[in-house]
Length: 108
Image (tube, rainbow, N blue to C red; front, side, top):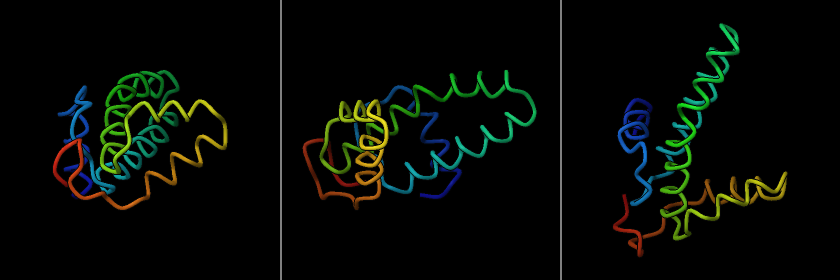
């Protein structure tokens, strides 16, 4: 999946918490959010705040689908509430290769 496909997928599955997302879709989404946030914060902090709110739900959905891809439930994202350790675990899981077919569907 390329960069534009990942962005389209993130917005088209805005509240799609079922299914799976490959590593490329997840990391391209993260790259898009980081770059857009930087650009918008240079322009205006208010725009950056509105953008952050606009991509919050699709970001959670992409994260959930990424966790499904490695066979974990999306509720594991709550580990992100634990500073450093939780973040490290989530990053470790996000870089793991896709699992074959699992209970969340066929491999993407």
